[in-house]
Amino acid sequence: MQSGTETYLTYCIPTRYMTSGQTIRFEDLTQDNWDEFDDTVMGSEEDSFPENIMWEEEDFMEYISRPDCIAKALVSGEYYLGNVIGYPLTEEDIADQRLEGMVTTDKTIHLINIVVEHSTRMRGYGRMLLEEFIRCAKQQGYRRLVGNFRPNGSLHLIKSMGAKELRMHKDWEGTDEDYISCELEL
Ligand SMILES: CC(C)(COP(=O)(O)OP(=O)(O)OC[C@H]1O[C@@H](n2cnc3c(N)ncnc32)[C@H](O)[C@@H]1OP(=O)(O)O)[C@@H](O)C(=O)NCCC(=O)NCCS
Image 1 (cartoon, rainbow, N blue to C red):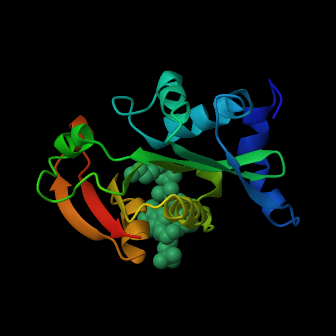
Image 2 (cartoon, rainbow, N blue to C red):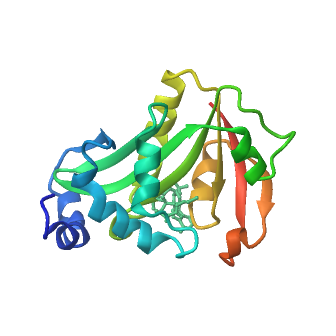
C-alpha cells in the first residue's frame, strides 16, 4: 500500500484477489502502521457514514494509540478489506447511549467501529472481523460486548451472534437513521 496508488487498487482489485487464493489475514492497526492504512481506512469511513458522525483521522489515532484498544485490519495480500475497533466500555459511553441501569463497565468491551470496504461487502468479511474482535476480547477476559448498531447489516450481524437489543435511538446524532444499542454475552 504505497502512496499514490492504494485508493485505486483497493477499490478495483479485491474481487480478483478474492478468487486468486490470496491469504486473508488480520493485522493489528497501530500508530506505527497507520500510514499503510490511512487512505483506505479514511476512504471507507467516508463511504460508510454521514459527515456528522464520520471519524476524522485524529479519532482513529486517538483510539488506536490507547493500550487497551483492540484494533484490527483485515487484509488480503496488500489490500485493506476492513477494520474493527473497540476499547473498554466507560461510564461516559453508557451515558452517551443512555444505557444507565442496563449495562455495567465490568469486563465489557465497547465495539466502536466496524467497516468493510465498500466493494467487498456481503462476502463474509464483516463476520470475520467481528469474530476476530470477539476472539481477542475473550482472550483478554471480557465477558460482554456493547455497541451501537445500524439496521444496515451490522445489526443483523451482531444479532445473528446472539446479541440482544437494549435501546433504539431514533435519528441517532441527526443521521436520519435509527441506531440500536445491543449487548452480546461473550
Ligand atoms: C456492516 C458491515 C461491516 C457488514 O460487512 P459485510 O462484510 O458486508 O458483512 P458480511 O458479508 O459478513 O455479512 C454478515 C451478515 O450480514 C448480512 N448483511 C450484510 N450487509 C447487510 C445489509 N446491508 N442489509 C442486510 N443484511 C446485511 C449478510 O447477509 C450476512 O448475513 P448472513 O450471514 O445471515 O447471511 C458493512 O456493511 C459496512 O461496512 N457497513 C458500513 C459501515 C457500518 O455501517 N458499520 C456499522 C456501524 S454500527
